[in-house]
Image (tube, rainbow, N blue to C red; front, side):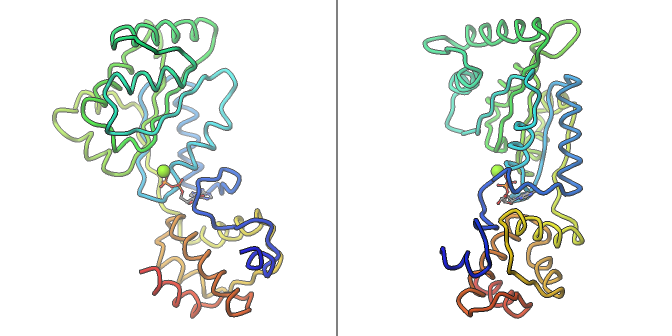
Length: 268
Ligand SMILES: Nc1ncnc2c1ncn2[C@@H]1O[C@H](COP(=O)(O)OP(=O)(O)O)[C@@H](O)[C@H]1O
Ligand SMILES: [Mg+2]
């Protein structure tokens, strides 16, 4: 692996599939969603949702969003798990806000969260709950989230809630029995794949971030990468990682369309 990096003069692997905010590339869709979310949180819009296909960068975007959040916004981030009861969900949220949720029942948990949120608002601050993988929330958990989105003063929402999930989240919200929560969603945005013409910049950005000195990509490659990935960053990463390894095995640091095609066959 180390040799693979040194062939290309790389400091780190440029196409890891982890959600690393250091490699964040501001594509048009990512930029648009980020600014919508900033607006939503600052304006205290309450419930918000981001929908995006697998691998479009939802988790990465959440990390970047949270990293740049003003210090005046207290945040809690949880990954939803369908195994959680409503009480466990609440306890996870409270614990993440730094509150002590032990041995409280559901009613008291909400009461405790509410008084924390009132204090937060009173001191001029704001609170944000992010639920990633929100397509996994059960109907009961979504109902609990709806109840949390009800916490408000007469002027404003006390808790801004961001649901982040795959298109299945939207299907779920369209179910008749969940129409109440659907109606509460004040901001809904979609994270799209990269545009075809952004793919080259995305790849170059990641290579530069990894300090690549000696990688050449033939211009015809980008069309092939687009056809395979349809602009989904995770698929671009998988393919690029593989083609760099192939180049390493073949002792070449120039990526060609035919090398990409070999890799695509392996990936399918
Ligand atoms: N805007 C972006 N800039 C850089 N890398 C990105 C971007 N969006 C996605 N990626 C990369 O794509 C992969 C999948 O991203 P991830 O956030 O896990 O997607 P999702 O949560 O939507 O499934 C990760 O390797 C991530 O680094
Ligand atoms: Mg994710």
